Each structure stands twice: as structure tokens, then as C-alpha cells.
Image (cartoon, rainbow, N blue to C red; front, side, top):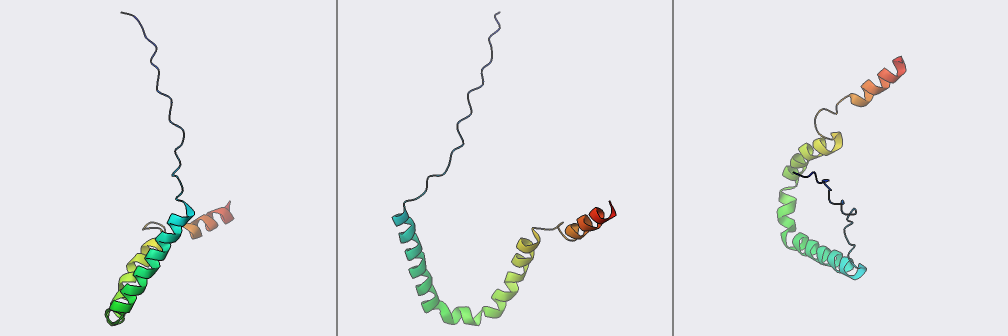
Length: 86
């Protein structure tokens, strides 16, 4: 039995996502803007009727994203107190 050196394949270079041409990006934003306008124009009455519910539904999302999930409560204050005690 012969010993062969085990060669790992070279890692591919860090792939970067190709940027979309500026015209494609401009058209995408224009399409999104037109779509948003028509949704608001055609369904504005429904959105106004549901506004209180939408605000209440936004509260849990704001809590999650503003605190970075659970477990982040008071850590900054604990770090400050720990640094002051050192």
C-alpha cells in the first residue's frame, strides 16, 4: 500500500454577488413605486380601517428588531457597571 498525499481542493475565491446594471435597478424601483401607488390608491380605504390593528401588530416586530431578540435586555447597562467597577 502506498501513501498518497491528500490534497484539499483550493477554496474558491470569495464570490461577490454581481451588481445589477443601473438601468435594471432603476426599472425595479420604478415598478415597485407604481405598484405601491396602485395598492394604496385601490386599497387605501381598507388600510385606513385596519390602521389601529396594524399599529398593534407592529409592536412585537419593533420589540424584536429594536432589542435584537430576547436576551439583550440590560446587557449594555451591566457592561457599563462592570467597566466602572474595574
